[in-house]
Image (tube, rainbow, N blue to C red; front, side):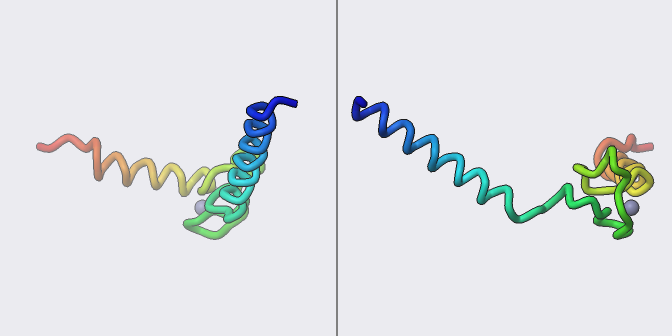
Length: 70
Ligand SMILES: [Zn+2]
């Protein structure tokens, strides 16, 4: 095996373990809505919020950022 091949394999493995570590602390997608702490719908389980809380959040964000003045 060539030296640089070996090196790149090590690098890949290291990167993979890095990614795995970074994924461990679950910031989102634990199936619990961050707003109401209810179980998120299964098809949305990778998201932070349940459907109704997401709609609320969308509204709030629109008012905060994209809201027209006047
Ligand atoms: Zn919710």
